[in-house]
Image (tube, rainbow, N blue to C red; front, side):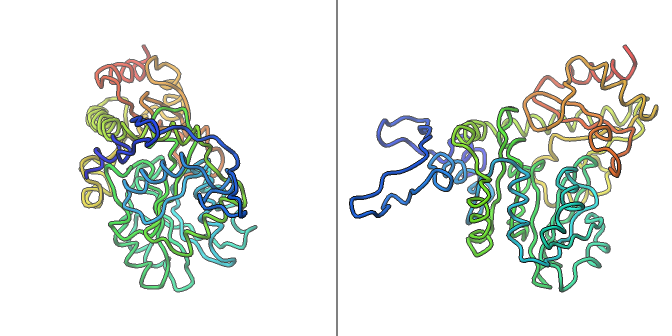
Length: 375
């Protein structure tokens, strides 16, 4: 089945007791033992065992073509569970430009856990090749990269990494499984901040790891999740399943809006540069064409000719766009990222990040145009 069908029907599971189309929400924290003290149901305790969470994992895993999928309480906890599953002393290659909170953890905290992190321009094939050495355990990619929306070549990274016995993990939050399938391209793990597009309604914090193989790494991440309590609550899992049902239509509408806005903004007098992987002049356009099918996502950034002051003023004047952190919801968001990321950020101070929602594109355009014009 196509992703649209898998998502819309949430794998078509029916509650056998009631015959309900929407599966029930399981909120129990503990489970009954059998008379002989066994747990034949396979369920022991709510921290590790919840059927609603398993149902969410099944849908996300099917969309990514994964052999094993784990849901977590956030995208950060999902990523950290993977990093903490690596042996002490492991070397990680990570992008210079990526989700700021995770980059900050890698730069300031990873060494406390015995991990060595090497930051490199993963969008530069030669630089990436030079960084992947025999001592590397994991190559972490984020593509498109937040907030500059560059593209890393997943297939090439996988080829280089596998030659030295390293693994490749891809943060595919913004591409979503609608537009990109990293496992098919050779990735070993796919991470999602399911808070964003997978849920899509700005009301759930969640994360997911999708493994190409149900192997020791997946088992280790599962153990880390249980021991650290990095769990997704059942109600959040229930809402995530609900959001997944409209994933295809939401993501395609957002991507269509983003592409249209990117084209219009490229000719705007107040805009110095539009950062969007679907523009033919974008640095990673050719790679994006190969590994993203049907669209380039709903995220773009613009750099204002008037610099930081113009960017902040534009964000202050919008009426329809919402000034807020996060992305991937049905409503459009705008943010001056440098203000959020602070010192050391690679984000230009004249940049505004735009998360395009599913509203009418002409309304979105008019609001931006008027805000940049000062009206």
